Amino acid sequence: MKEKFLKTTDTTTSENLKKLGFQVVSELNGIYIFLNTDKLQFSNIDKSKIQYSNILTF
View 1: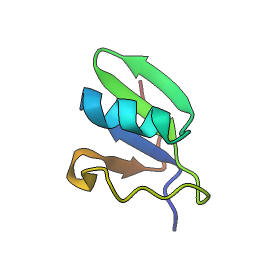
View 2: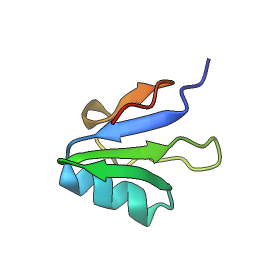
View 3: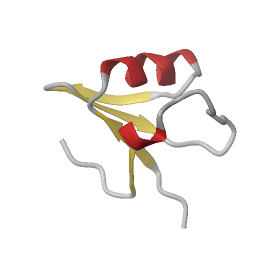
C-alpha cells in the first residue's frame, strides 16, 4: 500500500521537496506535511528524514 503523505521536521528536506514540486498540505510548528505522488522521484533527499503515512494529523 502506498502512503498518501510525507512528513518531515527537517527544513532543508522540506525546501527540497517543495523545489521538486511536492504539494504542501501543512506547515505547523516545524512539521511539514506533503502529498505523496507516484509521479515525482527523489534520489538526492535523505530518506531517513521523511516519514510516510496514510493518516493526516496536525
